[in-house]
Amino acid sequence: LFMYPVLMGADILMFKAHKVPVGRDQIQHIEMARDMASSFNHLYGEHFVLPEAVIEESVALLPGLDGRKMSKSYDNTIPLFAPAAQMRKQIAAIVTDSKAPGEPKATEGSALFQIYQAFASAEETAAMARAYAEGIGWGDAKQMLFERIDREIAPLREHYQALIDNPAQMDKILLAGADKARQLATPFMRELRHAVGLRALSSGSAAPVAKETKTALPSFKQYREKDGQFYFKLVDAKGQVLLQSLGFASPKEAGQTIARLQSEGPDALASLQAVLEPASEAADFLNDTLRLLKASHEASQK
Image (cartoon, rainbow, N blue to C red; front, side, top):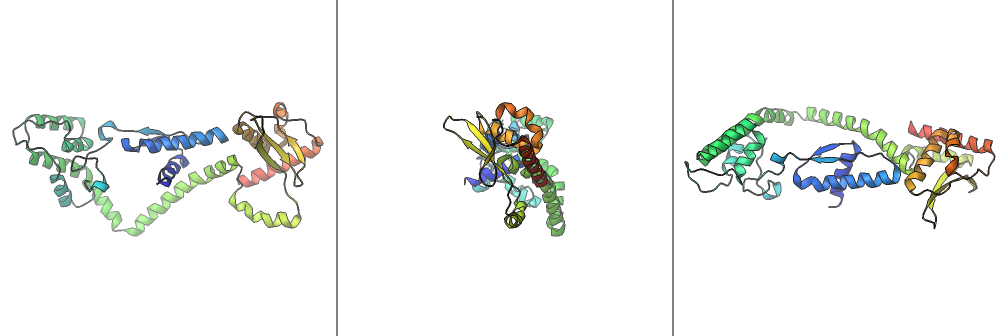
């Protein structure tokens, strides 16, 4: 149960959605996605867009055939892509009150009217409201609802059936969608992995070479001290400290400084002197080390 909102949040955040159309009962999932994005951004820098829920008030929560929330769990839905005859039968089953033809009927609380409103224009909705006030019979009202929905759905139903009858075309569309999503997601995933300090999965292939040559690049170590501040140091394969930072108020600031050193190399040193301790190593050696790290970083981005 917990994984469902996490997966939903991933679908939203991975593609940097700004606004997400949802029903009123789905707002909490958008809020969870915002919380995930905000937490990550706080720790590792601004990467995720904070999504906003968009709710169309007139269709925010549609009633089902029995007046309750429309849900497959309640078996009270209208199958839009079902044959027209089946849809007509479902609409005929909408629960109404016992008022006879000629008696004025209230639109407030009427499941039939709310469903009609979701498909109709403002003018059509106003006309249906007048028909209610004038005492339209429920049979006629249901016929109007069927005709309005069918006029909207018939072309879509035809296209839906054409796709169902052509699985190869369906597969082609799905593969094209997956490729489009991959083009957006892959570079973003690379950006996120870099932000948290994870190397590309393909970098594992370089491990045997490093072992064989007995060499390893210096690496940054980030940590927190008892004073509550966050620090990092650059250490070589033997654990010797090549560069030491001063304290940062948050891990985000420390991580951003590390990112600059990795991406800019020795060019970043001059502007970062205020947050670094004087280097214990010779300047030339440290500069060479940072150049190596920069080259490794650039290679991992390709």
